[in-house]
Image 1 (cartoon, helix red, strand yellow):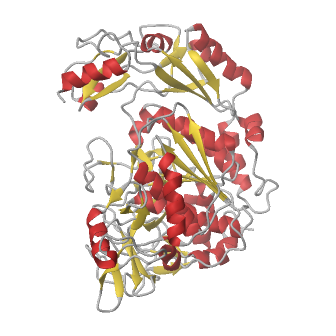
Image 2 (cartoon, one colour; image 1 turned 120 degrees about the vertical axis):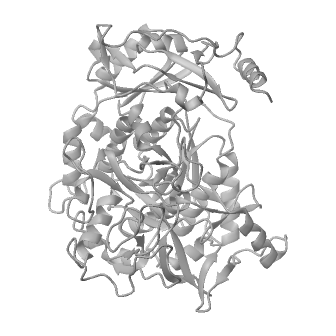
Image 3 (spheres, one colour; image 1 turned 30 degrees about the vertical axis):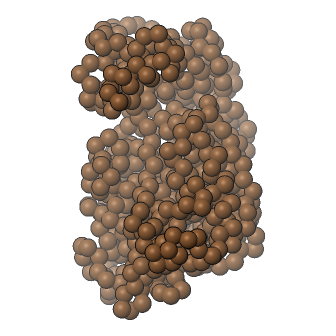
Length: 627
């Protein structure tokens, strides 16, 4: 379809009597220096011309409704940070005293009166469908583009790019002076900044699997996928894995019960997800997990992300063996505003001890529209409630896979992804897993060539990265050290160790990426939490505390470098030479275009992957949140 025909078609579908944008350059409102009575927010202007490559951008038609999310500032952000430290300090009166959402809100968040002040302002500007989140950190509302522009002293422009209507605020968002200090950001002013899933599907393995195993006929239930490449020494270097093979590879041992609830952050129409999950459970001989879908915002017919949400649900519950409950939150789109509301619902519902977000965007984009500030407040609250969000680090090496990235490592901007880079999130990198054949027992790992990682130039490092475990962090303008990711890693190589995922059952695909390693990590955490009566709380300091307890050498020492270690690119043939440190496999080999694993923490694989059974035994010795 020609672009002008598509523009007209979209306008008709939107009910517009005229195109959704006018192809004329329009004047931009005066800056804050020119207009008195307005206060700045964290939401900066969008460079629409750079994103769309369109020569002209016009006014967004009022026939296109906008759903905006106004982020409010915590009353006591520093107090919330200090409380989390106390909750993770053995011997402190607040140790492991996780709060309810109501308790946290009463102590640290805006009051309902403050939220109502924002509501009243939006009402005065003609907004409708106004809603306040239970923790008072967000107020959402619907308004026409002209009302939105007037309410936040900005201009909303639009253009078509690759047949898609892209709009955004071309000047920073502001609020009346009386709301200064209360409103931190205004999300939803653009649809240009969106999260991207970190998933890779390996189609040629599916053909190989069919040829080797069942010649296009369904295999018997619980049949292990094949190892496609076995070395002369019996190491499977290219295989296809199911949940039980991952359990074996990562040394899963029985739990006293499966009492932990988990959540998957999804988008669009997920009606097929439960059907695929039930088919997978039957196929693998796994128990059916209790399942609830929770809609956030307006329903969507989009099914483009089905393989991602199938991967997240089947891998996390599969390696966990079972969970108390699986919640799948699904929102309208992957825009920053919709995802912020989704995170908020997970936090305010407080139903699941762990969540997974297998998507992200460059941290500079999350910072530019203010979603980083808004989401970090939610994640801070989640940590004090004993919840953990896991997020994938991306599949473009050092580059976060948005905008200029093409899906090949080193084609994205050399910066980490958000939300993985949030200090209140566990960032999960990807490895290439090698197992012994037959049997799938652990042989070794090296860094996956496309795994993400790096150091933030915006987010500050949390205190559990201060004790010398993480070297080389840059000093930010604030004087603080930059947040470092990854925190941990697990299998993510879509060629070396992909998972057999049922998508539109009984069809299947082999899927990898850090979109696999992140939900696998959540499933492992569910086992550990169940083994500890759901008292572990936020996972990041627990893991760093275990590593700090068992780290054999001081920072900078070479005394503990294993004899097999040699920095080689590409990695050598198996064995990979991982080193056991506490419950971790410290990963020593690999290359992702700029980040090379080394003994100890490294930005490609973090502290390493998890030996589940060993971690169950030693996690109580964590120096940051032990028992």
